[in-house]
Length: 149
Image 1: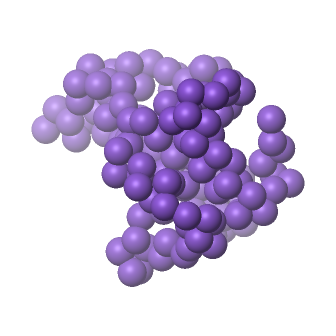
Image 2 (image 1 turned 90 degrees about the vertical axis):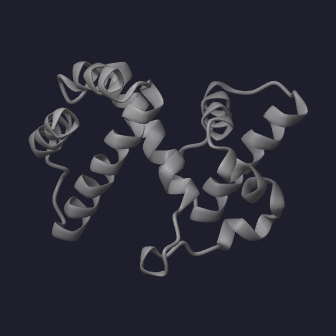
């Protein structure tokens, strides 16, 4: 299993590509590879990209150009799932359950959550601070209010 903080962006992306390749060919998967392959399976819009070539490992996905980064998206899914497995920050699992009930699926709830998580991480990076867990939970709770409105 890789240690992500020690990998380059290209190496990390190759890990995702390889997990998807192994899944498609029916090879045995390590637990993290199985998680990644399961996420990719839920995102058919990424299949061709991950199957195309190794050039994707160096691609730039610039938001100002309207590009969505599939690796960031899948990584945020993994982060949200880790939060749910540990219920950290405290209460995130209950919020997820409420969002899933409101939006009709756990996957859609994750999408709503990862948008907020991405914003929180971006703010922390921009301010050179740790992510604000309370602010994150507040924003997640506000999604429930928006869903009712």
